[in-house]
Amino acid sequence: MIELKNVGKQYNQTTVLKKINLTIDEPGIYCLLGRNGAGKTTLLKAMAGYQNISEGSIKVDGQTISTATLDTGVSYIENFARHFNLPVGKLLRIASEVNPEYDLEFAYEMMDRFELERKKKFNHLSLGMKTMVSTIICLASNKKVVLLDEPVLGFDAIMRVEFYDMLSESFHKHPRIIIVSTHIIEEIAKTIQKLIIIDRGSIRFFDTLQAVEERAYSISGLKRDVDSAASGLHVIGQDIVGGLVTSYIFDRPPEQTDRLEIAPLSLQDFFIQMVGHKGGNKQ
Image (cartoon, rainbow, N blue to C red; front, side, top):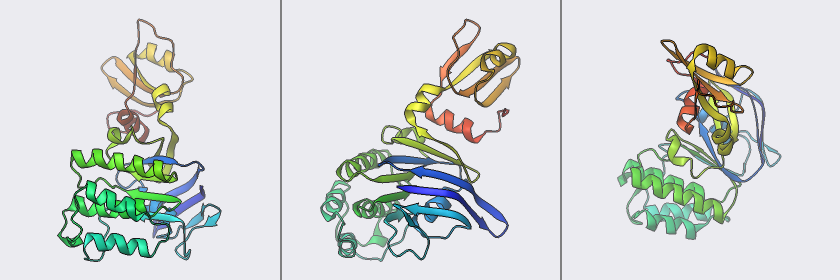
C-alpha cells in the first residue's frame, strides 16, 4: 500500500509537487501520465526514497519513506539509468546476490527473450538494450512496489510489444503495485488497470480505464445546444470553430438528439483535455 498525504516539493522558489494526496491500496499495473515537467519523475523519486519531500508524508506499507529509509520496499529505475560496466549476465547475478527475493530465473528468461548477450558489457549495449537491462533488474527484484520511469525510451515497436507482455507476465507471477510513467498512451492501455494523471504538480485524475470509456466523450453542435446539453456536467475542455462548439465531458452522457453529435474520447484525447491544450477554452 502506498499512501501520500499533502506531499509537496520545492526546488528553491519553484514548486514541483503541490499538496498531493494519493492512496494506492491494491496490487495492479498503474500508468502515470503527465506532460514534460508535470512532476512525474519527482513524484516517483520521492516515493522510492531517492529524494526527500518538502512537506507531507509518504508511506509504503505503513513505513515512512525518505532518503534515510534503509529498505523502502520499493524498486525504482529511472530512464537512462547507469550500471557498472560489467557483462549483462554478471549484472543480473549481482542483483540477485544482494536481494534474497530476487527472481533470477525470470531475469535470465527475459534476457534470453530479448536476445541480450550475457557476456556483452553494459556500456556496449544500445540505448534500448540498456533500458531493457534496467527494467529486467527492476521487475525481477520482487519488491512490494515497482516504479518504472519512461521504460520504453529507445525501444522500437516490437520491443515495446514485448515489454508490455513482460510487464504482464511479471505482475501475474508476483502481483504487486507497479507504476509505469510513459508518454506512449494508447499502447499501454491494454496492460494497465488504473490511470493517474499529474499536471503542474497536482493529481488531476485517478481512476480505472473503464471509467474513461464510460464517462469521457465529446458533444458537438451549435453553441446553445451544446451548452444546454452540458449544463451541470463536468466539462474538461472546449473547442470553438466558427459557430460550432465541441465540449469535452467527463460525466454521465446526455441523451442523444439529432442536433448533437456525441462521441467517446480516446484515452489520448481524454489526457489532452485533462491537462489543457492551446486550442481549447477551459470552463
